[in-house]
Length: 107
Image: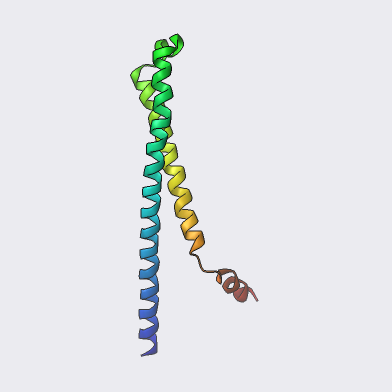
């Protein structure tokens, strides 16, 4: 009976870790999407304004280049913020006994 209880306990721990990982990922996606929206607006306004006002930008930045500038900023913001959010959530909720377990095995 003891091995079955241990196996069930390990399964519950794995399910709990899986649920936490999904929650952290979802938080990261939401934070990344918010950052991407802000970055899109913050990049689109000066890009579009410069194309209208500056002769160099009007001559050299076609619509494809403008879209590339805006979407690159949005993509970078999304991935940076999502990654930082997921790592911060995992770091805050990680267990503190991990270092002790590895040091006991070495002795």
